[in-house]
Length: 266
Image (tube, rainbow, N blue to C red; front, side, top):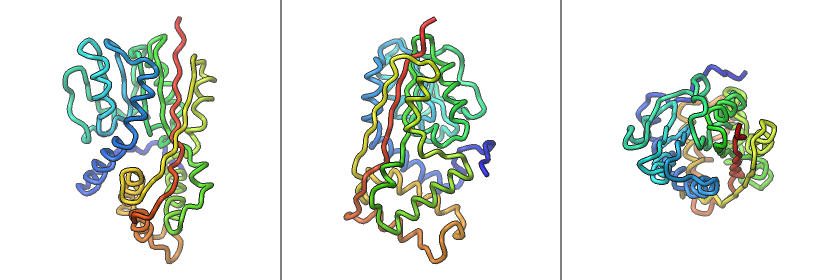
């Protein structure tokens, strides 16, 4: 049963915090280039007011700050701001749970979220909040993944079982949606956004490198807090983690899908 009241904040365990900090840095190295290209395409410019939702390590907010300059503004929102630098210059770091808290109304030229909405059962309502927070003519940019192609490929065992079981658990307990990426363009167009576009990208995930560790490390961290009975009898999840860290391990990533659209002018 999905618990929509559950927060998505990392717990206070020091080892969990360290692992998540490392994972966010890896995700930044893997994904920031694609994010920069998408935000450049929508025209981010000096004096823009921008909002980055689920900002993680804060690297996208920092890049936005360079683009908007001293006359701009960047609000960096996350339920857990321990992993990014504090407010500085044009960046305001704000602790907020977007499943419960408002973002604002007609405040931003650009509202962005990467790898956030797919994890939250309230994703449709949060997208509505993002659109409400954009100024008329402002841009909404969302990135999430779709696992359809990943699951269609020959993922080796035991890693295939580990990946499947933990995603199914996240879906049943927290409302995770591994198909949300493919829904983005339709979600944008049905809400009346203009100039809607989308792009999907896939890369090779190689064992022991950032290209795979952004995901493998998340699974490894989850093992520290999950009971053994969530897995089939006799299954060794740690062997699956070790397999995915071997240099010979290579599979295609899920599809990283970015969609963008513009709020209509009045």
